[in-house]
Image (cartoon, rainbow, N blue to C red; front, side, top):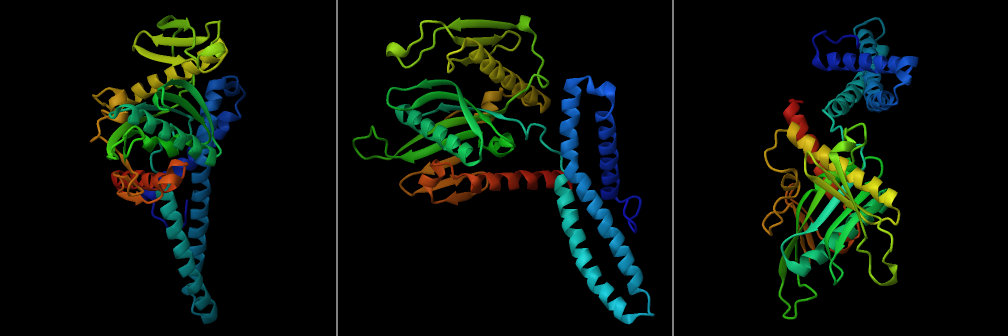
Length: 366
């Protein structure tokens, strides 16, 4: 690796290991036998892409270290004082660049969430607060769909249970886009609203809540499901009533017998499309449960993600009278209610990502 670095430098050892693994992955991807296994090629291609940035930084680190060694050698040569002075100036710049690369490397070397690049299944449910909780749940659904639009992602409704006054009891939808899970995963939890409901005649401020769950969308390579373990029900969609109700049963309910997990989709007119979407939700819920098991969580996955739905159980509060939104995990408050509910979430997303990174750095001792 880099000249002048000791052999027992842990950073150098990690970078050498990264470059070695990158070369090995490239060799495997070029192997005709490996190319016959589509699933393995997918996994290797993802790994190669994830190593690309590290390899680039590693080579920059080596180049800067070589330049530093050359500059140090010139500063020690008394035969040309002018060149030595220039070398000392260059050495100062190189030391700054080396520190920058080392900081980037520390972040890049942190353990990555293997689900960060996946698409997302989001679930929003009305919590405590009656009709007002349903209206707030609908506000959150619009907020996330607008954030997705701003991010260049696509959203598709999978299943919904609406109230009669424009609220929702439950909304399950998909978000498709690069890095969508990495940026949305911290939205999981209880969201609390404080405002005067449209149904309140006395002008009193009410507190209501809704819960949000963010699940990484599982692919077939992530979760193995045996067809014999599935019970599939076909039924008529609840629809929107009137002449639009379909005469052909297209809605699909799939139950995974070993776990009891159920997924429903009735948004599409095609039974096949509804089945595909329901299977996507089912895989994601099974993957989430497996992640929970691996992390040795003892509470059920839904409660871990969203809490109880009580007013006191929250990650973020939306206070309308004060035009204030506060995320309690990072102590960040913004006075821009309309903009935030229109999808302007980046300040919160970035703060939560920085918090995640800081925790990882602390745990890794970097």
